[in-house]
Structures are given as C-alpha cells and as structure tokens.
Figure 1 (cartoon, rainbow, N blue to C red):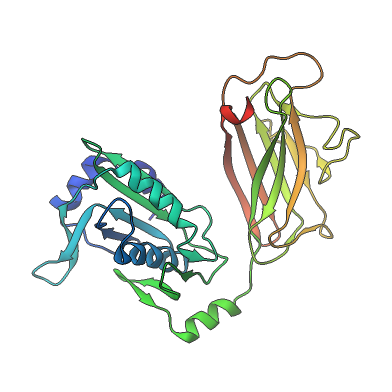
Figure 2: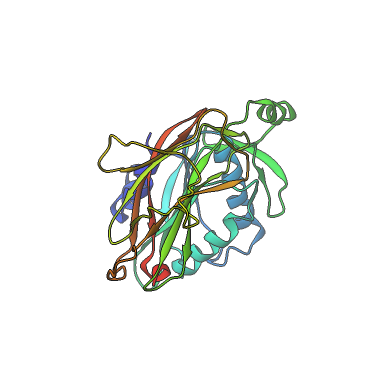
Length: 301
C-alpha cells in the first residue's frame, strides 16, 4: 500500500465511500474524531501522540480525523459516520504545532492536510511514515512507546524497545537550504543534514533548479571552496553533482553546506516564482532517494 499516494489523493468522495463500504481500520489506517479543533483535551493529545509513536515504530500509516469508527455487529472496527471538524483550518494549525511535541525523538516528514466542506468545517489527514531513527516515545502526557498491530496501537514491551535500540542505526541525509541577502542579490546555500543516528559515509548529492538562479562558479566563500568534490553529471536534469569519498563523513545531527546558487555578477532579473530544486541524495547505507525542494518566492524577495 502506497500511503503517500493515498494521502495526496484522498477526496471528499472517498470519505463518503468509507461509510458506504464500512471501511475497516487496519494496519495502516486509523479513524479518529477530535473533541475540539484546539486539540487541547487529554484524549486528543493522547491519540496524536500514540499515532506518531505507533506508526513511526512500525510501517507507517494514515490517521483520518473526522470519521467515527466503532465495532459493528460482527465485532469489526469500521467507519460508521462522518463527523466534520469545526474550524478545520485551526485544527490543521494545532496538528502542525503539536506534532513536534508529540513524540521523542521527532519523526521526520510527518505531513497533515485538510479537506474543507462548508462553513469552515472539514476533515484532516495525517501521514506518519515509518522511521529508521526510532524507537519513538509518545509524549503529551504519555511517555510510552507504541507500535501498530492489526487495527490498534499497542504499548511496546521492554524487549521490543530494547530490540529497536539494539538495531544497527542508519544515516538519513536530507537536503537543506539557507537564504543570503534576499532581494536583487539573493543567493541560496544548498547543503545536507544528517537526521539519522549513524554517520553518513560517502555522501552524494545531485541537483538542478529553475532559473534565474544557478550554481556559483566561485563556491561558498568566493574563492571556489565547496563542501564536497564536484563530479561530472550524466543527467541533464541534475547537472550539479557532488560526491565524497569513503573517508568523508557527515556525523549524526550535523550539517554540511555544499554549494551556492546565485544570480551571477551580470545583471539579471530577480526571481519571480518559487525556486524548485530537484535532487537525488544518498550515502553508504542510505539508498538513492529523489525529491523536490521548494523555496517560496517570499523568502527570496
């Protein structure tokens, strides 16, 4: 099941189908009805914290907010009624605010989106991916480790937690950016951060972007220095490629700036749209991953 694709493409019609087909809760799907859009009740906070911990410590999954699920006459937990959330935009804000506080360590790449109905009401969808930086402890008053099994979240036993801590940790390289001198002389530093719990050996980054920004020939410091050796690229869509040897490493929780995008010394028009950076990133024990980084226009101006 591609939960990322499902997260992006769910529609209001799908919500109606949940009820019409008595959609069951399962390993990757959980239904919840919040008590208020403020997410300030103990139960609401507990539900979010358990989902963050349980899905991240398992295989990932979706939480659908605004659908009531109960056991039917066959004892199966399934969707029985739609209960749109009042002020769903406020609910989304609260989800984003509490996500970082709901689990320790924080789960990377959690996403939330909403589907509005009428009068400010609607539904919310939370995508919680499997994590390789766990185990993750639920917070917000919980302080317990959870996992997903069947259609429920269960407290992890001591041996489960010990086993996860004992597993070989992996690196997790993500691309990052920093804006310098926004406006007519804007430049953007591109780099990598290791969010994993193991050292990233032999880091690799290939990327390209839309104009008018392009890779500076003068490097990060104006004297040609760049954070990794520049390599020849075979992909015209990712023309700027950097790769370190096996004796070059990025340690956990450390960042490394790689290069800088600029408008150049000749006069060029300032950006008029978001900066779109398409990239591939990898290192030893982290397979090649492709992604898109969007730098909003308002940050460049």
